[in-house]
Image (cartoon, rainbow, N blue to C red):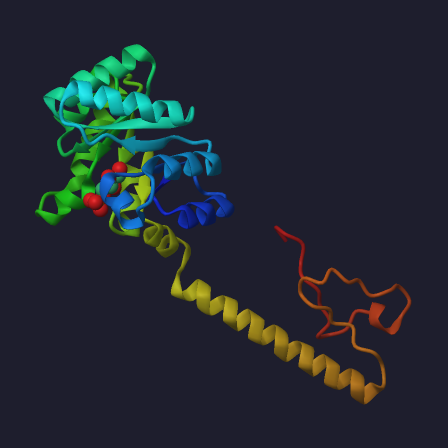
Length: 259
Ligand code: E4P
């Protein structure tokens, strides 16, 4: 499953790109309102950071307005995808954009029937909002599961983009339900990385390493021989034939990756 970031914050996008996990970005007027500035400049900057799809949302509610805004967004970069809300006007705009070769993301999807119609009209991304459904006591994942089944049954090309993700379990559930993409707030991406046992384990390994180094250094000092333990990431190798070249308890360097 592809992972998009659901933000207009450039720094968050840069960080996720550096982690090597970023497949695209979704923005919306509310996310843009959090950062301010020029929406066009932000979109251009995002499109430089990722070559994946970057959704830019129209705010017009009439077809001509949607087309005008969407065509302007599409000129900003080749990876822009125009985000259009589900509505009668939205479907018409999606269909017109498809004829013009402009990719669209149909947003504010709350039922599988809406998703089916958006795909038929020509949207390449279909965005069901799972969190907002959960908020009103309806199971958002049902829409993802139904759409995944429909798209598979009828070989529909559009991709399901699970949106309104609130926590890491939504990501796991979306992947298992067959969603092609999930778009995540940066906080949820960070929550996916961390686990208390992982974070604790890193501290324990470091502490044990330091203890071993101190013990080896104390022994070397007592023996009058130079210590051999190297920094974990120094890459230093003890010279062959020196005291440091022998295999001793407490002597270690970082194991090779995969070992
Ligand atoms: C993304 O495309 C959607 O606009 C976004 O995920 C909505 O999330 P929210 O329900 O948290 O506002």
